[in-house]
Image 1 (cartoon, rainbow, N blue to C red):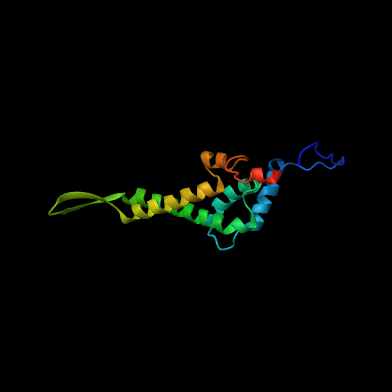
Image 2 (image 1 turned 60 degrees about the horizontal axis):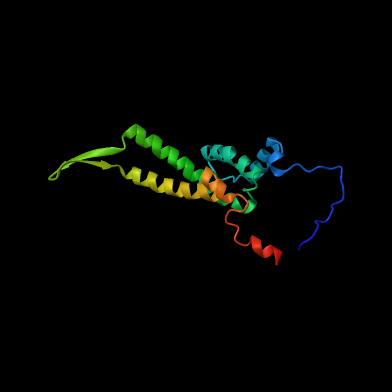
Length: 148
């Protein structure tokens, strides 16, 4: 539709844009969405990330399970790194092929968890490049159809 935009009725009530709401409101909204089955360590990750996602409009009730999985994988990454730092990342074997240095099986699990985590980072826009891709006008294939 072309032409002048309609004039909205003047109102004394001013709605704050989503990103200007007080931080306490975002925390309260994210706390209402918290799953009760996460561990304390996972809930700490939730409490750090979820209010920001609420503020940005990226955490909705149907995304709770996905963010909970993010928290689980993030905790597993931290646990695996701590374990490997304390117990060496590799071990040595000797045999007919001589001395060989091999990665612990936990390293493969860490790498797999890292790939899962990286995918979820992109889904929620938690990295600079992923966030740029979520901005308006980036990848909005169907915007042109609104004017038909």
